[in-house]
Image (cartoon, rainbow, N blue to C red; front, side, top):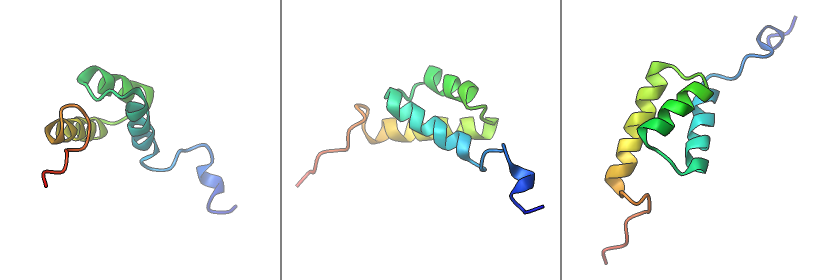
Length: 73
């Protein structure tokens, strides 16, 4: 038995979170309802959900329109 045989069918660690981030970006939504839906769709842990919430807050603080800030020079 090779080392890979015991893990067939199990997604790589963190794959659900990566998929959720891709889905949220594709949906162009980072609100609480979208995060909750992503957690259900991708079977995320409470820790993953906390990360998504913190990221959404960080994005909103950076620019509420979701666009990079204009150059001030």
